[in-house]
Amino acid sequence: MKKSKPIRIEEFEPEKAWWGKESNGFKTRVENEHAWRVPLDQIKAGNFNLDLKNPHNPDEGPGDVDHLLPEYEKLLAQIAETRGKLKAQLMEALKR
Image 1: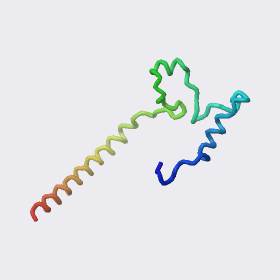
Image 2: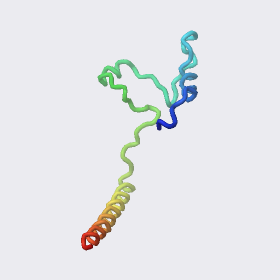
Image 3: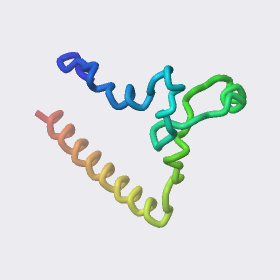
């Protein structure tokens, strides 16, 4: 968020609508992909750390090695090429 564009109260309307009203026991509040219940025992076991993973968006792990390794090697080659170009430019600049 930039200071030039402050957050407006209207931007919280979806959260306010989900939160519901105490007068009806928050009956409109239902779990969804953005809001879910966490048992108190789980919170205590985590030393009250509320930085919890979204159970509706499971971690898929690091990915497929057969796909990631070639990508990694490609990046390493690009880094080496860029390093070589930079070194050549620096050497040229030092000659002047």
